[in-house]
Image (cartoon, rainbow over all chains, first blue to last red; front, side, top):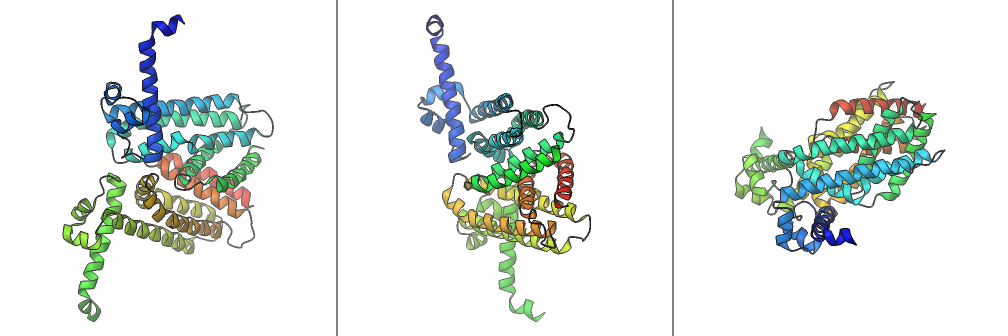
Length: 199
Length: 199
C-alpha cells in the first residue's frame, strides 16, 4: 500500500501517458497517419486535451514517443519469444511463426503508417531509422538463434534474413485484405525449405 | 504527317493527361500522399490548373487513374520481362532480379503511399484491391513461367509466391534507406535456395 500512496500522482501520470500511447497506436493502425492528431488521441484515450498537451506538446513529440515504445515492445517481444521456442522438430515452424507475428500485428500496421509518412519527411525519417535498425537487429538475432541454437550452421544468418524480409512482405500484403490463409501456405513452404537447408 | 495534323487536339489532350499522371507518381514517391494534390500536380506537370481539373475534377479521380495506370504498366512490364529471360543457368537469377525490380522502383514507392492511405480509406481500398490482385496474378504468372519454363516442377508455384513476398519485403525495406547492398546478398542466397529446390 505504501508505494501506491506515496507516488499516486506519478503513477497517474504514467498511466495517462500509457493510455495516450496506446490510443495513438490504435488510431494509426485503423484511421491512418492524417487522422492521428493529439486532439483525436486525447479523445480516444479519454484524457483531457490539456493533459494530453502536457505530455505531448506537439504532434512530433507524440510520434517520437510512440515510435520508440512501439519498436521497444516489438524488440522485447522478439527477445522474449526466443525463450519460448521449443527444442526439436517444431522449432523452425515456431520461429517462422513468431517472425511473421512481428510484422503482421497491430504495432506493425501502425508502424507502416509512420514509415510511409517518413518517406517524405526527413526529420521523421531521422527518428525512425535508428529504431528500425535496432528492431531489425533484435529480430535477426532472435531468428538466427531459433534456426541455429548450437551455432553450427553458418547458413542460418542468410536464411534468417530471408525469413524476415519474407515476413515484412507478408505484413504489407496483409494491410488491405486479410491475407492469413494464403500466407499460411507460403509460410509452410518456407519452413520446408528451411528444414532442408539446415539439414 | 496526316494523322498528327488530323488529331492534334486529341494528341495534346492525351499528352497532358500523361504528364499529369507522371507528375502524380513523382510527387507520391518523393513528397508523399498528403502533398499530392491536384493543384501541386498541375504545377509540377507544367499544366494550368483549369486543364488539370478538366482531366481530373477531384483528387479521387486523379488517384484512381494513376493507380490504374501504375498497375497496368507494372503488369505489362512483368509480362514483357518474361520474353527477355535467357535460357540456361542464369535464368533463375534474372527472374528473381526482375521480381525485385517490380517492388523496388519508383512506381512501387508511389503505390506504397496509396496503399498506406487506403488502409484507413475504404473507398480507396475498394479501388485498389482488384488492381492489386491483378498485378499479383501477373507477377506470379511471370515468376512461375521463369522458374519452371517446361511446366514440370509443381513446387515452382509456392517458390514463386515466396519470391514475390520476399520482393515486397525488400521494397518496404528500401523506403527509408538505400537497401540495395544488403538486398543483393539476401537475393543471391535466395537464388541458391531456388536452384537447389528446383533441382
